[in-house]
Image (cartoon, rainbow, N blue to C red; front, side, top):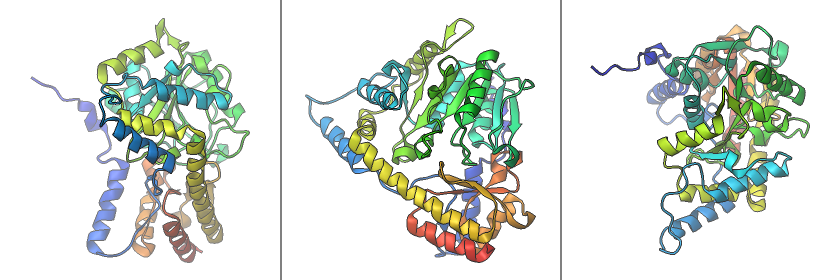
Length: 394
């Protein structure tokens, strides 16, 4: 008899963003034609930059001629893209072999798939508030989860201590949802801790391009010792607008081993077994991101989102609300006014000013009473949402 994976019964009844969609849909059904100002999900609003669009078109044309047609590509990524990413790291002082870069269909997919490398007996430490998929993926895998709460007292950037017992450590910097960013000393403490314990850090660097302070690390591999304890998972979704086209990459150093097994070789075996890789067309578009022209153009888009952050921060300042994030990250994390819980505040904003955010309770128990705004909306919608927030809460 076929047995289902009963761990699915241990998941929350609904994924956070699906629950938000259901509430928004119910509101729209009751208020047809009412405009909404979506500052919730981290989906970008600006189109792909010109360099990427040109590369995508060229790649489509390549597929129309026998001389340039591409069939199956290497499962771990096309050499031209792996080399472009390694060169991008080199310009930031991080030396990688192109073969240590694995092209993926996006960070969300990879964060779940990478768990294949580790025994379910290895506990996972999740620093909360956290992207809910970290917890859900490990529940599905049957792994014990260690919840490490953070808060304003430590800047949402907790340090390791000797009481923590986990083989996997999730770190996200800049953090989703709080926008907090580890400095070098704070991140080095985790690298040293992982190496002492024989743990592996899964470093989610999806938002690294938003770090504007040169003193803050954008890659964990800027820290000594990270190559023997860390895997870095990156995305082009927020960096370059690939939310609808799906492309990312993962870095696994060759020297990363546990109990005589090389995780790099294991991941090669996993990818060559479980995937035929990412399409040639998307990888050509991705390679354009790492050209000088592509980098200039994506920075122009990022500046728009940073201006959105400044507009929202000004509104929260006028309302006298406590918040963090926004400067080196595309999220603002605020304390709900009047002691409201986060879902009550969600419903209040939706009903009163038609602004959609993300309740902090969806990111873990210590997120209750807080709320997240994304800066990825259009500038016009962001200005209108900010004006409504200031008027309602000021």
